[in-house]
Image 1: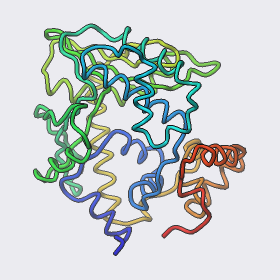
Image 2: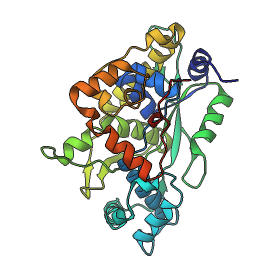
Image 3: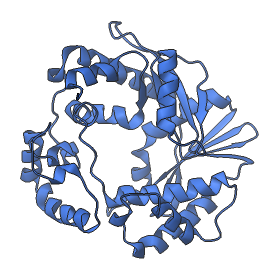
Length: 331
């Protein structure tokens, strides 16, 4: 028997839950988008940029795990393709470009005797929804896994449920330790558009890498930290200064968002309002028939829907299925 939305919401927001930065960002952008993704379980739309990122991250993580670059980055990309079900969205003619991005990212990473690819930590969050404000438990985060451990998210979920305390899942792409100096790097496949600078694009991820840095600092207790965003298409690494004030703010924001979601859950779907605006540009709910009429209408008003049929055709040609491409009502 299918779980009702009310029961799903209760399970998602009860004690002992695992939260991620992307999960909480959806809430901040639009509470109803969060509800649609995690309660109604409307899947994200497969896209070429997303697949590009998966292929590059997989190739780079494999290199760090083996502590050396592959003989051919192009071959490494091809190997990653065989593990990605949506790989058809990225033509093989782009493999040379993706391989070049990876080679540059590898060469630009800081030198460190100890390297970890996609190491993940859990930071306990002390929350009481009825309290006037949430607090963050500042005990050192526990190392849960590294890239060699499959099904990372599920293993972390099991660990959190066993202790019955909410936690934040933080998984930077690369962490390096050089003595007491900690390096945190996140690789991004975001393009630098006309009129933008690499710093403007990198700064969009400051909150995310600050959360990663906060957890990594708790785990390793370093004396110095360097935090960077590597923009693969631009083949540029941007260093982001993460101050103690930034870390304090991201901890407070993270806990507050979780607290707010738990409070909203006690009320129900009406406490997850729709915020129509820029977020509708890429929102899966706004492109799924009947899921969010307001978002769909806004996409039409802004002209963002003009590419929907084109993107749908691209998915069909690539053999990539997204349930929202089929007409029908939400179950």
